[in-house]
Length: 161
Length: 386
Image (tube, rainbow over all chains, first blue to last red):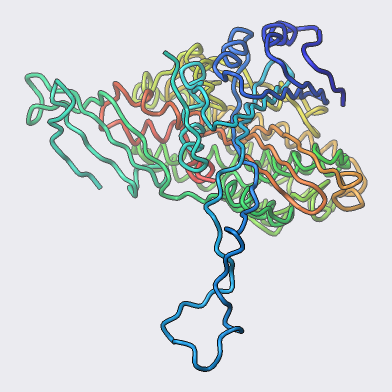
């Protein structure tokens, strides 16, 4: 596995697409038949267009949110059943869990898998805002995964122009 | 089930919307299709023709939520493999192979050669049974009951041979991390080879007569036509794209395992219609028989599984990918985890790209041709609803 920052000439068809991506800062990892590029808060449609111009196909895309540990609100707790005596009111709801604040969703990372020649490019884009540009107009087969991510992860995909 | 409702808002030409599904026997799975019919001309019925002007697709009626389940709390690797295997009956081997290979890619495991060859045999057998089923269903819709029965009989012979070899007709559950769960002895493999060759010999004549049947060609020609440019732009995979002239097959262009040693000839047509897809599937059956029998002849000796358990080294974890050519096209799998368990999963089936562009494929089709068109696309809704 090799790590590098920025672009690096790799030869063949891949050189064209990585040259086009050079304007964005990314972390590059190379493995056997796979290249991983990690971006943060970049326009997904521009990356997709670069790959489309290079003749790459979109295999699939997926997303995930970083797990966030819920924090109790100011240490407030409702007494557990063990704390209640025989004279406790039967109408009182019993909980042993502390009251939790509503936890914000974790940071979103969307992964795009492109096929270019014999290589698979795994493009990871981390989006703190949870809003990404839709690439369905560039790759129609992205429509279904984008819809799934909208429904299940709350990702907002905005169309270009 | 059909519900007809008058659509008066929005559409300036007063289109009629017909809903098909979500549970309809002519659909490939649980899904809802909203079809807009064109306003009819002089010979139309009640003012609407039977030609589909537009369509909307709604999924989610059979959603498993496997990826969300893994993302929520992680999962044991073995449990993940078992769930992936049971997602779909006709793509079980392809899905589990993609998952296992992704695990092996993430951890750097090496699969013994014998296991790689056995995986190839199982993959090609699954392709044959899937293609024969689709062709038999197509012949049933066309009214060729005798040919349909013959193909189902030949498929049954393959399933019985698979059952005798692996103790299971479908969903064999043999794929495990770094190999197959048990070694198939040479005597059983030889018996399977004989059964496969007999089935292939019987199938050849029928394939020739089906392909040369002018009535079948006339009925299917032009139905659901896709050009090579459209297939490449839309990211269509498998027999659908190969029938349009896109000569791409993961087994040939991204070979893994035994496919690196056993070359596969890519079968393609140029018509891009339902007839082209039928021809591709039938010819792929013959190619799968050839590759499978060659692999059985070349089957190396040795263990069927690498020793040792899943180990990412220093417990760092990692991620891996895998691409497998399933019966309906490329099955792609991405996994992330460590020695303790699976933490991220993404499984993409060959049908997902087709479902994404299905409304465009249906536009311009006669309503009566809808079941035949959907059958020619060979959609797998359970895989898409993982």
